[in-house]
Structure formats: structure tokens, C-alpha cells
Amino acid sequence: MPWSYTDQPEPLLTRALKALVNAGTRAGPAWLVVFASLGLSLLGIYAIDVAERAPGMAGAIGPTALRQLIYLAVGVVACVIISLPHYRSLGPWTWALYAVGLALLLFLIIPGVPSFLVRPRGGARAWIDLGPFNLQPSELVKVATVLVLAWYLRYRKNHRTLTGLLPPAILTGVPVSLIMLQPDLGTAILFIPALFFVLIAAGAKLKHLVLVVALACLAAPAAYPLLKPHQKARIVGLVQQIRGDSSEDLDINMQSVTAQRLIGAGGLAGVGDDHARALQRFNALPERHNDMVFSPVVTRFGLLGGLLTLALFAAWCLGAFLTAATSPEPFGRLICVGAVGFLIAQVLVNIGMNLGLLPIIGITLPFVSHGGSSMIAQWAMTGLILSVGLCREGYELQRSFEWGSNED
Image (cartoon, rainbow, N blue to C red):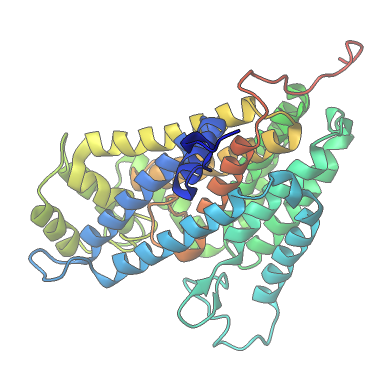
């Protein structure tokens, strides 16, 4: 048969583009998670620059925002690396990753560790100083905990009993206890909603979970005396704000009141770039590039900017939930749902802090706040969800978990 032009192999670029289009089609709603992550990260870099640099300063970007841009690049690379292999290939490694995370948390609280490696900040031993980069193990342990819970629960049904809730509670409780010893109560709290999200998705009975929550609420007052003095002061300060008492506005409530004032200054559509930078500079809001970064966002873009930020987080959650719904097996579904649990809890607490609805407990805003460990961990979660999306076998909604009709 004579040779013809059509017999020539497709150029490498054409094949690569076809593979990319095919991957994009297969990933489906997982791309919503990726695009939301990118939008939030870029918004955060700009908000950090507004918070840190005075109006009229020369240069395209400030040093803090530049570091965040580098963290974003590392996070995106981590996302790509994690998303390429099949997510089920991580299964046998989940226990090892979990153990490494616990070992790092233990390292932080071991007496005698040199201060050049672990230096307390804000009263907490939560970071390992690696020179140009400070590693916060609790952020990486979030990813490890989601993976180990998803792997443990993927084919079990003992958690359908009250006593069966104990193993996943222990898996979550061990890192929570170690993080509280740092002490970092804010980060520790985030593990609880994530655990409940995973248990609900895995088929745990709601009546058992409601009972656990009720018992925890009844026991909460007994835990108050165990709080640190500054933690008690934050709670007292919040109660004073709710009552309209301004006596502590220049003391314990200064950060919260200043954040609310700057948010109010943004109005409906925000103020100009120079005006926003001036407001941030002369109102001296502590941690405005970190825990309180939602304040610069709303100062610059107003209520509409705040709603847009929430819409991006909602899009992230929607994409993760849809990816879970179309995943062919439980490990992938539970990974997606666990990641959503962490993100929703963190967003609600952080924005509640900025609006004066919750006490300030040192929680960052995912993707938006400054921090390398947080950025990389969040993009790792995004990479896991993308891997689940790329490995779907179809677009139809899958049944979650099935149980015998004789169960109550």
C-alpha cells in the first residue's frame, strides 16, 4: 500500500494537547477546585502587598508578597506532582505519612531542642526553623490525617456503632493532643469538623454524632479552667464586645476592633489602592498579612470583595463535593470530603475572628494568608482532589455507601 500523508504519526505537541484536553475532560469539577485555589492565592498576594507596603512605594511587589508568590509556585508544583499518580497509590503510604507527621509534632515539644531549630512564637512551639523556610508540621498533618481517616474508613462499617467511632476519634485525637501541647488551640479545633465530615460521608449514624456533640457541649464549661490566661482573656473580650463594652478596645480587643473598623471603611465597593494602603499602615492592625488578611481584602474591595472571596471558597467546596460524588470508590470520596471539612472550618473561624463574631485564636485564611506551610498544604489538598477527579471512571453520580436494611 503506497505511503500517504495521513500515515504520518501525529506531532508530539498535538498528542500532548490532546492528552491535556482529555485529562481536563476527565477531571471535570475538580478543575473548579484548581481555579478557585489559584484565584484565592492571587487575591491573597495582592492583599498581603496592600497590607505591608505604604502608598507610593517603588517596586512591583513587596518582599512579603514576593515570598508568598514563591510559596504559591511551590504549592502549584506540589499540586501537579500529587495529582499525576493515581490517588489510590498513596493508600499503603498513609500510615507512614501519618507517623512522620506525628514525629514532627513530637519534635516540636521535646524539651532541650535547640532554639535555632524550634523557637517559640506568640507563646507556641509550632514551627521548625529550616533557614529560609519555617515548617509548620500541623499544616502537613492535616493532609496526613485526611488520608489516614479515608484509608481506614474506606471499606469499614464498624463506625456505624457508637463504640466504632472510637478508632477514628483516636486517629484524630492524637495529633490534636500534640498540637494543643504546643499550645495551638486554634489549629487543633479544625480537626474536629474534618473528622465529622469524613464520618458522615462514610455513613456514620447521625444520632451517634449528635450524642457526641451534645456530650461535648455539656463538658465544655469544665474545660474553661484548663485554658491559658490569654485564651480566657480573648473569650472575656469577645463577651465585652457583644455587650457593647469598649473598655478593652485599646487592650485585649484592639486587634478585633481595628479589623472591624478597617472592614467597615471598605464600604460596598472598597477604596482605592493608595487609600487602602494608607488605612492599613496608619491603623496598625497586628497580623494584617496573616490571621487578619480578610481585613485588607475588604478594605480594598469592600463588601463585594468579601462576598467574592466567599464565592471562591464556595466554588472550591462545590468542586470538591462534585468530585466526591462522581468518584468510583470510597477512598477518593472521603479524601475530598475531609479536605472540605478542614477548609470550611478554617474559613468560618478566620472570617468570624475578623468580624468580631469569634475570639481571635490564630487561624489563617486558606490560600489567602501569608505562610509557606499553609499554602503548600492547601495546594496538596487541591492536588489530591484533582487526582481523584482525573481517575474517575465516568460522570454518573456514584452511590456513597450501602448498608443492610436491617440496620437501625
